[in-house]
Length: 138
Image 1 (cartoon, rainbow, N blue to C red):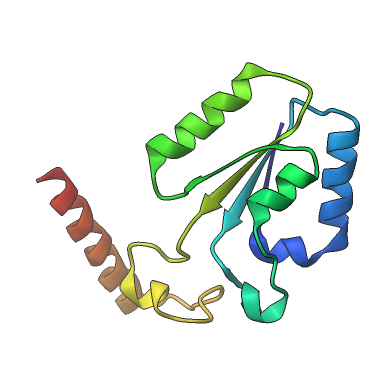
Image 2: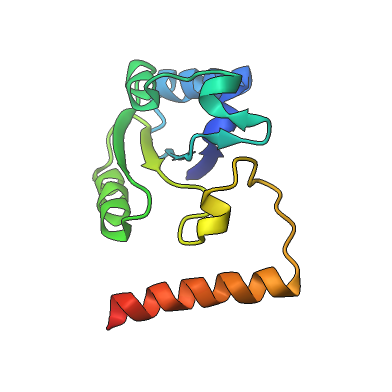
């Protein structure tokens, strides 16, 4: 069973209550993927409610935890492969990500959770992503 949460969602007490329950009940079939992009709707996570070391907190809650570069597909696949080993601990994978990765305008916009996209912006962003893909392939 997979649960995907963002770091901003971890401001909510019910997340930590659910994590405590999962560990107490030894839900080894649970994989929590945490998108640690350091931003939330109201601003930067560290300015709204600093979370500290999320991986260490998940370990302390009783999760088998790993932190990986969320933009590295092989690292994410390796982290997911670990969860197939089974066991009596739930798993947490902290994905260190950059919100809007690959699109400079989105990466560099502080409040990028709800950026409107018109036809011109869409074309510009797609061009940027396609250029990056071509550079990787070539």
